[in-house]
Length: 211
Image 1 (cartoon, rainbow, N blue to C red):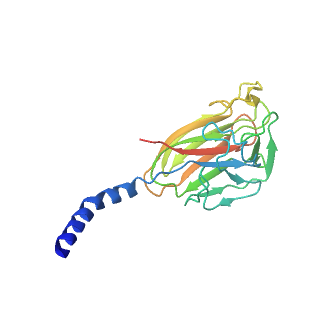
Image 2 (image 1 turned 135 degrees about the vertical axis):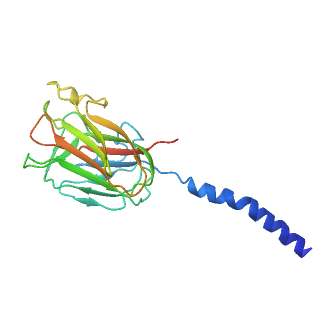
Image 3 (image 1 turned 45 degrees about the horizontal axis):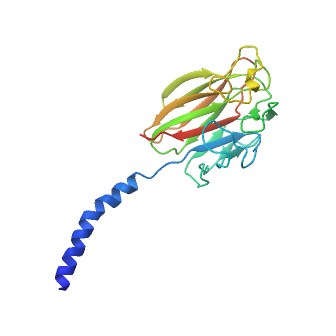
């Protein structure tokens, strides 16, 4: 009886083990949100994806590095963010959410860069919010993953004040990129001076894409 019981247990273990391992490989990845200059507070996070009560990581003026970014669910991740030198901060009138504040360099001859390390392998969508509080204060954003450059996209620079619109739209207050991480590559986001003599970051959202 004991031998038969052991045989049945071994059979169950053999059948179930591959299922357990496979489930482990499908561990989900949650979005990572970063806001620059000012944290609008829980309930005020109005990014184009996610919910108002999601967790966001704050990069205040002068902060150059954040380790263990928290995902939208508040759990610590292995993702590390480094930001190039900056010493300025301002706000956009009419906005109280993640787009309101932005960081820049008072030198006004510096292109800001944000580098993400430790993102798990997979496909992502990134939203980069980058505009100052004047019609010509836009930015041209470049995304690079390792040696691969995904191109450049610019926020609004048409001479109007539409960048203050309460509705956040792509090509106006932010630009979007889809990209793939296949190893340990760094994900580099560069905000180039475009309409004005300085560049900026308001917010960045990185969202895993489900296959």
